[in-house]
Length: 402
Ligand code: NAD
Image 1 (cartoon, rainbow, N blue to C red):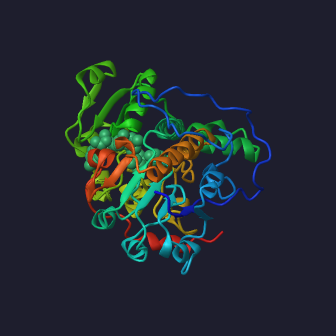
Image 2 (tube, rainbow, N blue to C red; image 1 turned 45 degrees about the horizontal axis):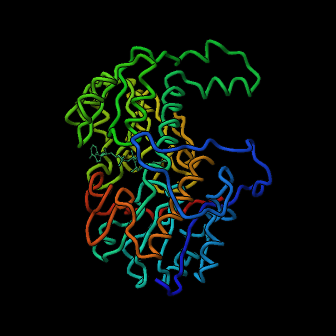
């Protein structure tokens, strides 16, 4: 493919304190392969220093030189939600859109319809629900992501937040900062996780990594998934399999969510399902905000049906300043950061470059990176998603103000 392409890349803003000139660490570990043997991203070359900030505007995923040397046009913006945003203006003649779930450029059916040249949507990360996958299927587009690039990053964040909730870490930290020594206040909601029942909704790359990481805490492990794990894995981790999510939540003290957002999982955790949970359960959701019903979570925290809620995913993103999850009691939320550690950025930047190299050379993109291709779900998309659209309501993101 020799002709000039226009690549529109939507990334989050640079740090308000300025793009870093130095870093906390001088290098990041070099991983040889992913836990299941899948090979790491393997572009012909990279033009960045692994461990540098690549995910924001100035980092540009380390793609600028590579694309411009070949004569392609590379437009990078963070302006994506307001009316007549740069994203909306530039998409009309874009061939490729690159977007990150952390600062998602919602590729709705309306935007896809406005972009006659658009053939490829790359997710720099994992989770392509910000694309109207039904519209992409109907337009015969390719949607792909960098499968596994940040699965372990997210698993680490989920384990951190499970412990933060059960041990009630955040209020204790606050007492230190505020100058107190209020031990009774600090421990009035603090428990050991040892002996608790901990379950994951979906045991794919992330869910399985969470189960493995929770095993040494001597908890009882549970899972549900549309694909059952092998007998060996179930035995090794002493897992209880549940045929459905309702059975799982009835048995667990802590539930960590790891399925993609697609029509089957949208608003899965609604008032009805949460009412089936044990009183005082904890939910950690690092999958997608919309898997949980916003108001049902707030209500359950207020009544005590949930003892705590954490995660890093919201809907929409960025969430409006008055989003009720910012204010609800007993939460330990972060912005959407788990999959965009500096370590993860190096992998997804390399993965995006690998995908672009394949695309320009008209070589197949790895099957495991595919979500939609050839007019249907493909690769990981066929394994982990159902057809349909879950971008409805994403225009609310325009209400966010810095
Ligand atoms: P994966 O494809 O390896 O695993 C997904 C699993 O979900 C599969 O095992 C699939 O069978 C299961 N599943 C799908 N629909 C289901 C349903 N209705 N009920 C039960 N199980 C179902 O993907 P992964 O790498 O583990 O990532 C999972 C999701 O985590 C992503 O799709 C994304 O939404 C989210 N994620 C978040 C971040 C972050 O930064 N917070 C980063 C990466 C991924």
